[in-house]
Length: 318
Image (cartoon, rainbow, N blue to C red; front, top):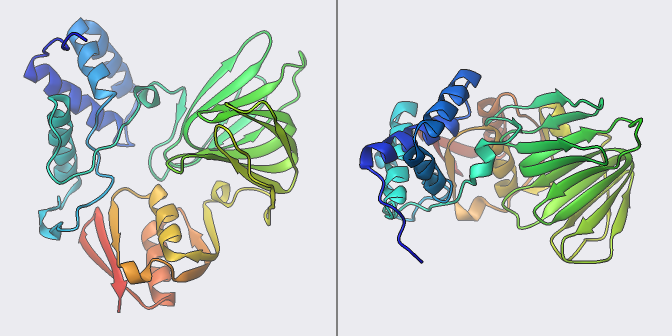
């Protein structure tokens, strides 16, 4: 395989700037337009972005010997750190001590997307409605013969409309497709190596990518699946996803799961003492005010919240 063409450092630096902006969760339509102009201006720009689509240096985990004082104490410094780590990755280096994860290029090109902490509703041309949860990305494709939503990452709630042309409605995930059978349902896929579907009206057929047999999930049930397996349906206790109402409802969840869900709606990272991870938590928490929810969680379970910066929290026992 031929070695990739060397790209000038200043172009890689510009690409890193753009990726930080695009991944900030606060990018504007005008910034997206300017990015497209920059990317298309020269072939090297597109090449730099293509490389960046394969590597990015977001912080997905912190090393055991991490020193809180070393973490950025402002959003500006945080983005600067992210940019430097990203640039190192583009040059073929690993950022020392930091875990590296992939951010597919297709996320930045998605038709519909939400930033961290954002929940947005979209009306489609057939009258169907999508509600995207925090940090979600989706494409929509309507043809003469079908209606299709591609969920790239995150979670979506869908209310399908009757189609005069009787085109089927599919949701594509990396593990297979879901066929809406006149329904309201939600789909989630992220870092769990599987996808989940919850059906609130009518039914949904699951078609795993590497399994010939499908399964229909009926109203009031949920199931998870990967490319070759579908779980047994489990009864739902709610009539609509709580997150569409900006709520998190925990029913005897381990603390680590509650924090994971809350931090889907807030930028930053947290450290949780190992002996606290499985403490059972039940309650209703706001997804519109994560700091308040964290304070309520700490009060009810005798926890201490230590903020080392606006973007790093340590949770430990009082």
